[in-house]
Structure formats: structure tokens, C-alpha cells
Length: 120
Image (cartoon, rainbow, N blue to C red; front, top):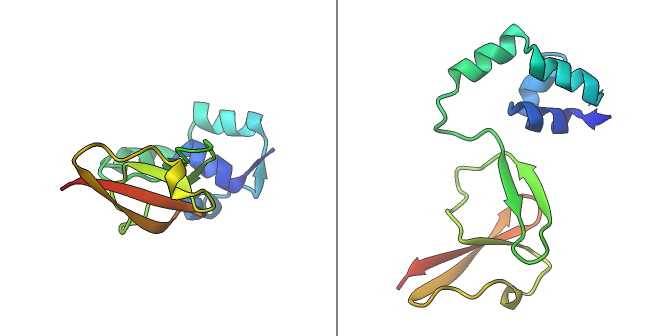
């Protein structure tokens, strides 16, 4: 069984849309595959309306341990070089490239620090 959130990620729709259109709190893999193979009209319309300019879900992954999650992107998120879990030492992350300086942005996703490398 998959949660409604996992189904929304797979269908690439907002969680609110999944709830509004009757995706149950838990859905079987078989039912989700049926929806993907024969999408209802609302899902077809949603995909047709998508311009591609704004992502529905972002895949976040720690550069140190590989922990990953899918989250709805926020406008304030920077373009990062690396993401690391907030419990890692920042020295565990890959070194910044020569000629760049690094700053950290806390609070990306549920647990990440975004490392932003910029030319000096």
C-alpha cells in the first residue's frame, strides 16, 4: 500500500489535488498503476495545463549519506551545489570548487542544508 502522498509524487500532482479528486489515504500499487495507465479526465487536464516552468515535486538527496525525499519546491530555495542532512558536519560535504566561496541555507526540505558555491 502507498500513502496518498506517495501516490501524488508518482502522479506528479500536488497532495491537495490528490485528496480533492478522491485518491484515498492509502492506495494499492495495482490501483495506482490503473490510474497511471488510464488517467481520469482531471489528471489528463492537469498534465495538459502544465507549462513545465514550475516543478510539482523536487527530489532532494544528501551528498553525504544519500538520504532522499520528495518535497514541494519553495520559491525561496536557492540553486544549490550540494544538499546535506542538517545533522552532518559541513566538512563531510564535498569541498567547494577552486575559486568559489560557499554559504549555507538551512531549512530546505525536512532536514537539509543547501550548500551554495558561487564564484569569488
